[in-house]
Length: 193
Image (cartoon, rainbow, N blue to C red; front, side):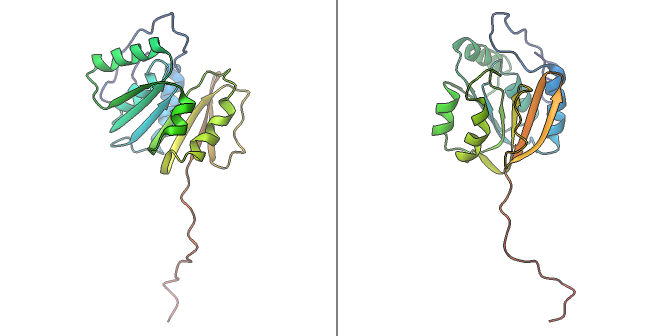
């Protein structure tokens, strides 16, 4: 697991072979972060990493300048690993929540500039996750939700869907919370009054 760019660029962590989580490949992570760069101003951003797994995405977001990142991970060993990585780098703007993502979503009252979710591809509730993000109003206006999933899932008909990217067997769907349209027509400055 490698941090691609930013404050912690080049740092590598050897993920234990016993872990159930599959970290997002470096190639897929680098490509999707390049796409995200056009939507996100990392400096000062508030981020949420759901199904944090190895902490790879959280570390990348912190390295790029997020003001704070909240990671949610249920597995005790994975949570310990993430904490050890954060402690090693002396990160003080990361909040790790060890618990169920769905319970967290239901109880969270904070909004984020960017949300990244990388659930197990076989998770039965996986198709519900985009709806829950918007139902619970977890994105700030103009916020970005990046959802990693298997190739059998298609979210292109979701009302907040904006893009799909595929890197080998890794698929990402991007969703953006759009600002509501204003009903006030713009005045035409060339009209005489």
